[in-house]
Length: 82
Image (tube, rainbow, N blue to C red; front, side, top):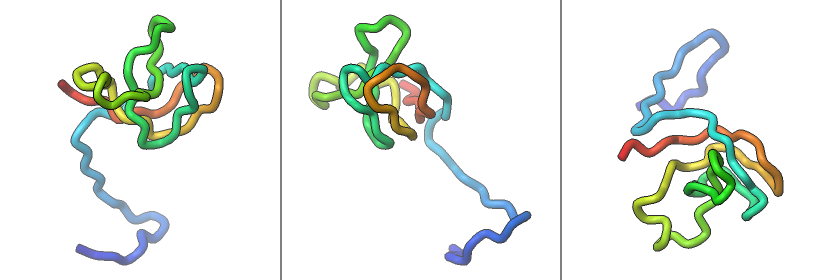
């Protein structure tokens, strides 16, 4: 394991355990920040922040990798493959 910084023009391998996609999200139900779990929103076709982790079990779409405050838009999401 090398802790040296990556120089311009060099490559770094990144391994993920899920699929990265942009998703339509609705932050009118609560601001979305990187790391938040996302579930289906009452706004059809959109995801929203999961506010109750116990109720979200089995309904999680993925984890937000970006932020959005008070509106609709898109954020990168690490999709769960279940």
